[in-house]
Image (cartoon, one colour):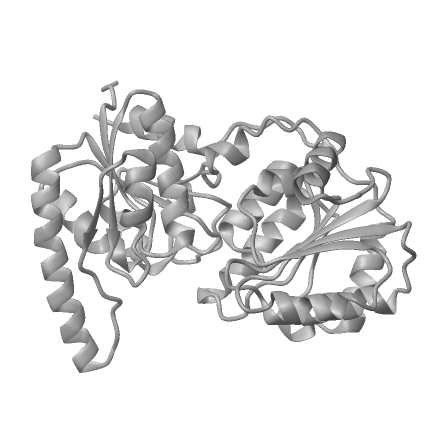
Length: 368
């Protein structure tokens, strides 16, 4: 077995591809490996923020999504060609032992360069439905890894290895032991008086928020006529929704904290008994890692409905996972689901290994 010393990770252009790749890179670097990240060019530059923060080289190359439109097809060919030659120079310069692609069309130019240069290519997909880019590249890859069991009908499932979704090291390795410790730290940080004996509800919809969740959940809670002693809520609204969501909570008696976002999700997961959220790959992986009862509202416009299939995976692992499709996410349906989970016993977290470690182990094992 060849020792993996230098790894290039293709992290796509969105957070769902970038952060799992960054997590793998950080862990590999902590183990004295040399890591380089390649992303697409987007309005938000991950390179500017995270390259200096973690001392990891991050390159941006050209890429484009494919389309049936003749003009967009030409744009795809031109940008992919530019990205291919940019990636070629990067790979020739750094001479990695392997290339790991995390999915997305932005990984195609660099993956093709790796294939032509005969650098072993590995793939990872963060959803139950393998994306088109990874499906296309899988015929040249050493192995295709996935976060969850795969539901694609056009792939040979026997050639796909379920490794789980890589988690941020600070999330997987949190030093917070239990709900009591989390509540105490939360109260100190936010000058609150949350009570360990009360059921804690955590609500979020991603960095941009989810309007349906932000509007429906407070109304659902109001309809249940819960007392101040029964519940406490932390609601992350996402950008632009904090003020309007705060207004909806003013009619409610129980303690609550409304924030646009909060980075230390391990603290919030540790104190939460019930979580209401979307079902993106990273979110589902985190809920599984922390063993949380949850109400999932899959994003209806997710490619090939992959969020719904992600949610089904979690429901298979934990029967106290309730799934409400976006079109059915009414105040009444949410109220019924919340009432249901309020009667359930919160699950105890079982020890687990960060799947990022498993991904690195598979690459080294398959490296020839």
